[in-house]
Image 1 (tube, rainbow, N blue to C red):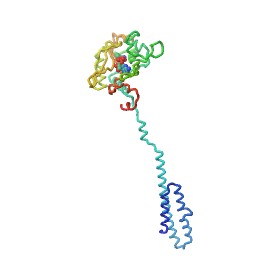
Image 2 (image 1 turned 135 degrees about the horizontal axis):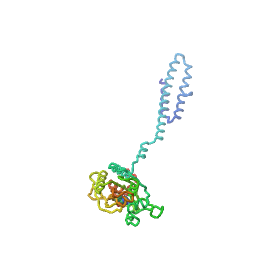
Image 3 (image 1 turned 45 degrees about the vertical axis):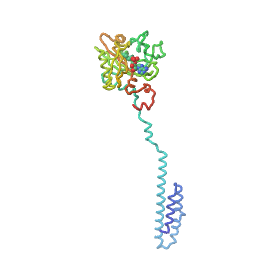
Image 4 (image 1 turned 30 degrees about the vertical axis):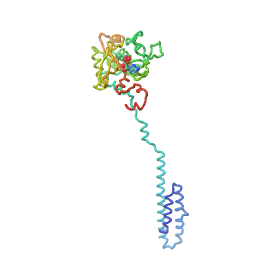
Length: 331
Ligand code: FA5
């Protein structure tokens, strides 16, 4: 064997230093091919005495096996290396994908609207809806605001260029849904109507030109201002927690009599105006075909955007509409 040790060493180091399948192939044929030293030695076997031939043949076979093994091992190694390179170049980082496909969630206003609906449904109300484009009848007249009435000026109305001038508009409050509900349903009525409302207000820290209100309407027998105050108190506590108080302040709306503004208490002890309310004016009841001798009721309406700003202590209500994902993701 020692006579072949040098050959084995050379073959092993040739296999080891081959960097790819091509180099390995040519080294292999140099050591194992037809013209290799081993093949030549095999041809010479015939010339040996018969008694020596078997031992020499066996030795050659062992040398050949060792050299073949060196090439096979190197081949497996090079194949693994090639696969690793390929895997690396075709690798897709799924963790990055997951990051960019972060799950979305409902907008803060939608969450608040759903929560408000839940609170009022829990108090026995149902949810009503009305169109965002309204006629003067629903937005004003049926609500006891005829066209000469100065209160029309309080609702900085956005008119739509349809029909007679100032007849069709984007609703400036959700109160038209009161009228539509009373026109179509006999009392008793217990509804809330959330929805988008529009005014020519310039956007600032407390105003948006398109904002959200929620309207409440109750029509039943023997309803008093005490029921209104109790309902607002219950809702405020269910929505904000029992530490928050509400109060009513005398005010004026053409569609309620008496009318009030309602405020909620802030942690620093001051009060924040949330909306308006009052006992439904008899003219509104009769405009909607309801006998005001038999039925009474109350209504309220307040801004959802301001309520959200208060609940989450936002300094500027415009944060809710600029669609900055970093802001929205927090909620
Ligand atoms: C009304 O709109 C009455 N319809 C409320 C009402 C209903 C009174 C039923 C009586 C009975 P007012 O114009 O005050 O009232 O608006 C109510 C609330 O809407 C305000 O308190 C405020 O929270 C919100 N709001 C009004 N204008 C804007 C605005 N530009 N941006 C954001 N919120 C506003």
